[in-house]
Length: 170
Image (cartoon, one colour):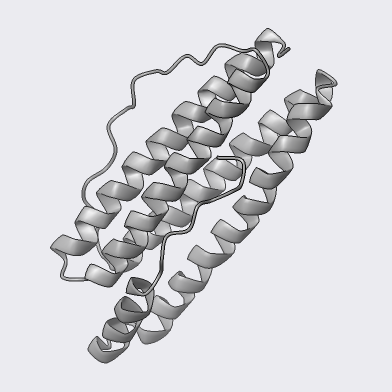
């Protein structure tokens, strides 16, 4: 059974993951509007992954006899200065989510909730991968600057990304 503090923190993280999904869908729309369908598709996959993350937490709360409390999702940005800026915003967001997961893990340490700690280890590893991936895209965009052919190639590469279920925990 989940302690109340952990249940509340997990519910807050579910909301954060759903907000992330909404943010990535907005970023996808921006990229499509900017004529970058591959980047748009990349963010659409991010959208689906964030929904999976929320569902993992949702299922976990239920499995531990907790109560899921879905909250309203705050509005997300819809405009960015550039394609580079949208990916930089994505990286900042992922770093915020990493911090949130770390705080949640610290709470489970304080509360001696080893089962939740075990589940959260997957999220910790996932965040390392998320940050690294976006950082690489940013580095590539900075390297090519405004080179149209380079942007075309990155868009084409990102558009080849296929959705795979985030975890067997879903």
